[in-house]
Image (cartoon, rainbow, N blue to C red; front, side):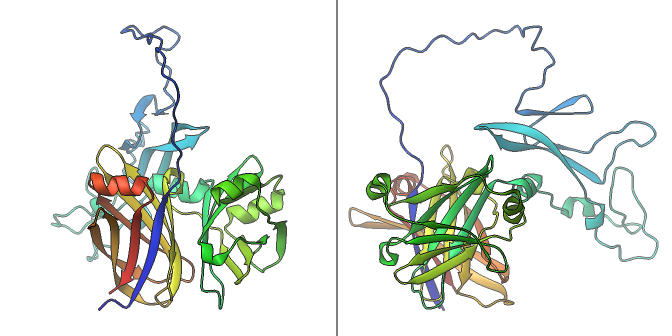
Amino acid sequence: MQSIIVLVLVYFLTGAVSGNGRRRKELPISDVIPAEQDGKPKASECRFGGESYELEQTWHPDLGPPFGVMYCVHCECVPIHKKRRIVGRVRCKNIKTECPKPTCSDPVLLPGRCCKVCPGQDDNPDLTITVDLEREEQEKNGRHYAAVLTGPGVPRAATGRFYFRKKTLQYSFLFGEELGWPTGLTFLDNTNNILEEFALSKTALQNRTEKLCGAWARLPRRYRRTLRSEDMAVSLTTKLGTISGKVLKYYGLNSELFSGLLEGYSGAGTAIGSVSPGTGSIHANILFKGIVKEGEKNIPFIIKFQMSHGGETRSVEEAVVLESVGPDLNSIEIRTVFDNPELEALGQGELTLSLAQL
């Protein structure tokens, strides 16, 4: 039986680009590689041990005699966003500590393996170890952060996005009309000491767009460490009361195209969405607090995307299980596929998302 439903309107965050057409210059395409470029690695490649690797390609490093191939080391050419470009960076991880413990007293190490197995064991435990170095890179060194802001006795919520670059923390907030325009923005540390305060008033741009955004320039080095260690929080002062939330890193923020605010009687959250235009594949990371109690395990949820147009209602549903409920924001990730009507509704800000506990 469904006990709680949280609704969200998914907003399109990117803008349209238009302009007068004009003839393009012909590209200098040639089958001959200039001498000065021959052998030079591309920005979208990785070089390791004299070899070139494509983005997302994985390998075990070969150190040559006497060490040979390091089968317990997993390397990957990880795509990194840098100055509006995607470049490749080599990231490696030792997976030996993740090997399952053999069930026998005399395990053996087979050639080309990392994990020991019992004599006669057919399965390869190496294949059961999942390594996602791109995700780990984003969560460890990413410059993008998110927050879900709630408050005791405040029936409404807000969500924030933050991007740190060159000593400046840029921020933007999404909230509903019922909350009203906030009058104050405060950044705090993990003991609720005030780091910085900003009085908020609508600018001409914000009057037109109804979007709250700004920047905290010249962030002190100490506060930069606080941000990177995820010990920073943010609060908004509103006519309904003060709402606050922790500023944390989450997977998917680097490639986020769509954002959403979730509100309900028992919780609040945000949706981080991206889409592959060619396939209609949707990736959504849903962050929420409340709804379920900390410590609960294996909670089933239904996630529903829904649109209505011309009297027709269409929906896409996915069933997921939250393995455990933590003290901060809980995360549910899904991948699904949209048809053209859902993609058009998403682009026009007419798609809703609901999260329901079964």
